[in-house]
Amino acid sequence: MSEKESIFREEALSYKENSWLGDFSISVPSILPVALWISMGVLVITIVILLTNYSQRVPAIGQVLYFPAAAESVFNQDGVISKIKVQQGDFVKKGELIATVYHDVVYEGGGVNITLQENAEKQIKSLKKT
Picture 1 (cartoon, one colour):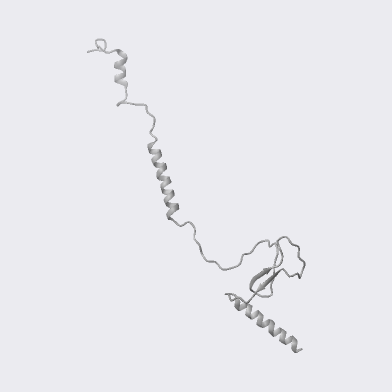
Picture 2: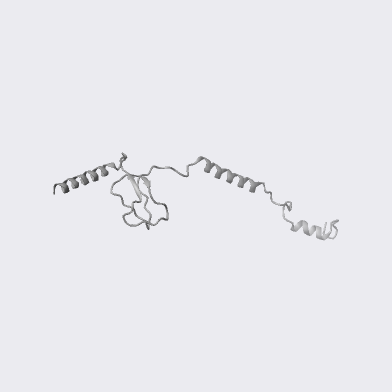
């Protein structure tokens, strides 16, 4: 049968010859895969935060140094400050008593304190002899 003798319209035959294979459909993409990926990410992050150590406590021995120092206090002996006689913001003069140091405490650095005390006693004895 030729095209003129066909029972189908000319544009229908043209469409049949030039059309793509398979059906096509217009649809909105599903949100389900996106929601699943986001929920899996949140789950992994939650597990990492809850089950891993992201901080650790370690013992430390030393001094805290501030730079620049606001004020410097020098004591003759090592020990623990037992009484502070000034308040923050008070004006003090050179030689004024601002704190009392309690040095009868046994601690790791006490060996230096004992040596300083022995040297001071030796100096006092030598000064008394002269």
